[in-house]
Image (cartoon, rainbow, N blue to C red; front, side, top):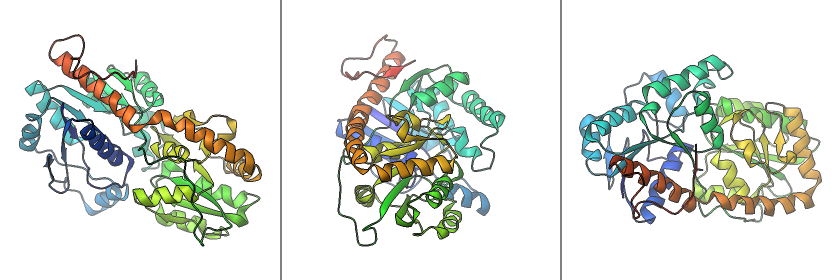
Length: 393
């Protein structure tokens, strides 16, 4: 297949959606497909470049602080790219994708979409995350302006598929994990001198309101073992300064920075426990990466997050937003080292079902369905359809 991915940002691995898109593109290429991209950034092979939209300095600061770029639609570039491919997959619901969708419809090119932007990602940034009607309004806006023009939508978790059904989305919803790279396997490394003799707790994710790193910092303050805990916050975002200030009173101030893929593998291998405190999350691939690599997770049991699905028992779930409950869970895993070591292997085995290769095979099957339907067939061509089951409803 010749597959086009349309998204606002593709070059920098500084947010989950971009990293997911790059892994998808690389794996599709490994599987023998030809992948094209329309996005902002630098020219590259099979990449069609569009400019960034004009933004005031304040808006630019907010958007870039989230690790994102918003593209300006260029109809000529989009048309040129679309004429090269068998199917187009839109990853973001913003102006670039909306313009591309219209052209794809006019050219009768099969098209699918992904749902990666949870309304809470937007409203938490504006300190409106708990306003249900505002979030429902964004679901409605996305639905009417974009998603209800598709027959196939990729949902990274059953949680977000349920949210779409609840909010009136009519397409066939394909529940397919974004998948974990093959590098994330059980691995332990000797700790560096600055981490030696410390209990290392890791959280990976954008430094933003909905991720709730603040709850984790407060929980460590309340832990019986606060004098031996080193917190590692892997990520970047607008809450960097606020989290540094909040962590100053810890026995060991948190180490906060963005890590490359190779660096992150080493940090995970030197950590003792993984915490995912987010209130809102479509999937949290970082959590899967952590437990696939041999870290027991402790996850916020939030009704607006898909991440609780990964907990194998109640010891890996705490009350969302409750630092006292999180502190109790942290203390349990510190005090039960032998059980933690055993569960590290159990979680690592659990992570194997989220293999990136397997998940991309399911994406290929979705693309094959879209192509077959566009041709007027009831099933995909044998050369296009992949023998991997997916969850649809």
